[in-house]
Length: 168
Image (cartoon, rainbow, N blue to C red; front, side, top):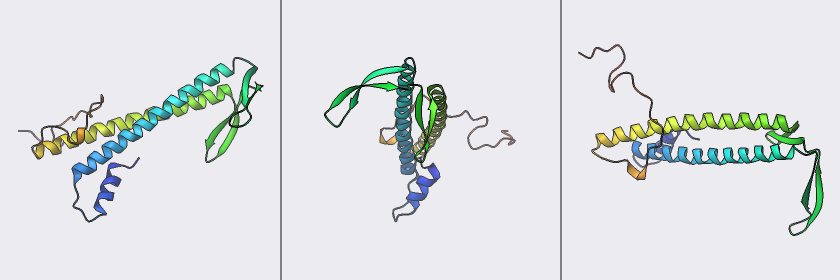
């Protein structure tokens, strides 16, 4: 997904004046779309893991083999413990179901880490939108934005102060 800085650079390229609020809203909605894609992919990985766990329980499984768009014929799946795993860029490797399940687990963990990063970034963007709205006298979030369940990181010092500054 594009970073906030990339979104702002795209805004600077055209002749219209730069509006940081619109850039924040665009970055937030881009992150929402990315989160939705990650959730869908995670659900697909979960479904695949369940299917693979069911397949490995039998050495031979009866199925209906497609013989075209409208015709099916009874057949069998054999070698149910062998699967091809996409490694990337159209490269495949033959793996056992157990190895494939480990790969799926690592990919799901990677998705969860990305989800947490995006949720944190979204919370930060919402905080910036709120601050910008307060400066402009707007009481609510623009564009129907709703905060997620994540909270922005806590500040150890007040806004506008740096650590080491005396508050007196």
